[in-house]
Image (cartoon, rainbow, N blue to C red):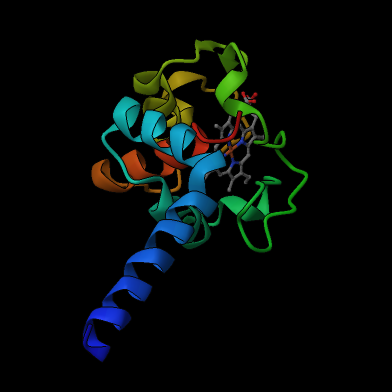
Length: 129
Ligand code: HEC
């Protein structure tokens, strides 16, 4: 066996190990991606970009310890969004892009989230069970 083959085996083994480490969350991430068409891993940086962390406590998002709105932990398991919309992927995206359009009295502002960004944000939120 050449050195290169040995090295390749090593790379393959560590890739397997890495995959194994992601296992607890992998299923949730796959399901969230299928529900929204987004990639959950893009969610946290996008939420920071739009300033969600100023108002919400969001597990896995750096600096997200805001207390203005409800904590978003377990949001995937909540029945209603903002107390008014049944929690479906479509409604989640609608709320994030235009909360004032859903409920004119809500304190959550429209933050200008785009069509493509909202999918990634919703995907991440649906991993928070
Ligand atoms: C200025 C503060 C503020 C900002 C910024 C903000 N939110 Fe909110 N958010 C709120 C408030 C207040 C509520 C509660 C709304 C209600 O019940 O009417 C809320 C509700 C929500 C809900 C529903 C939670 C539930 O338990 O029903 C989600 C989801 C949500 N926000 C996501 C986001 C995301 C994603 C962003 C960033 C794109 C964001 N918010 C930015 C204040 C904010």
